[in-house]
Length: 264
Image (cartoon, rainbow, N blue to C red; front, side, top):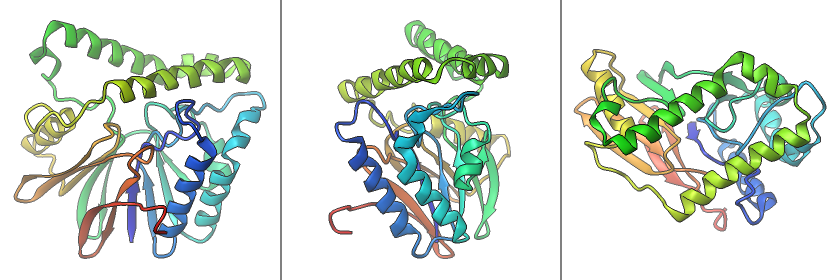
């Protein structure tokens, strides 16, 4: 079995009991490990993650989760870690510590005879998407795109890693906390097939001849399973923050699932 999950936001200061949240994710992964050949973590697994040039004691809060990942990879399960927009700043330590395979950009791969497009989903919009929106919305999206470029700039990443971890972490976790609180106060449900950015992106890829049997994304914190055409499909995974939804794939196909911690 191959599993796909995203958006756990481990360590979020907006979560009342982050240790219990981490344990639920660990239990979910251990359940998957019973028959998993590969697990794809499609971004924002951590609410904030940065690997500094200095010792960072804050990573100890994730020790149980990292040990779980290492146990799974030592068992021979491939774990693919796609950076999201909250856990961009990994530079080798996570890969070495947990044995995961880090992906820094979207990937097109073949699994069980199907061609898949895998990505966290942030920054993926159609070529003319922004111009079609109201000016106020355009401004917000352009700000996000600018901020994304800042976060991905290698020079600025280098400089940020020079900061004392305690200072930088407080900034990062508080920024991420505000994002979680805004989501709780103003949730953004599914916008519809003609407005949902990732659906539009996938449709454009198909129109451009870049065919994939299946597009799988995180990022949006909505659960979606939609046929784009007779032979193309998109799935948005929900999250492992509140919903604990995921997808499982075998030679027969793929389906969305929800983890029930009490039943397991």
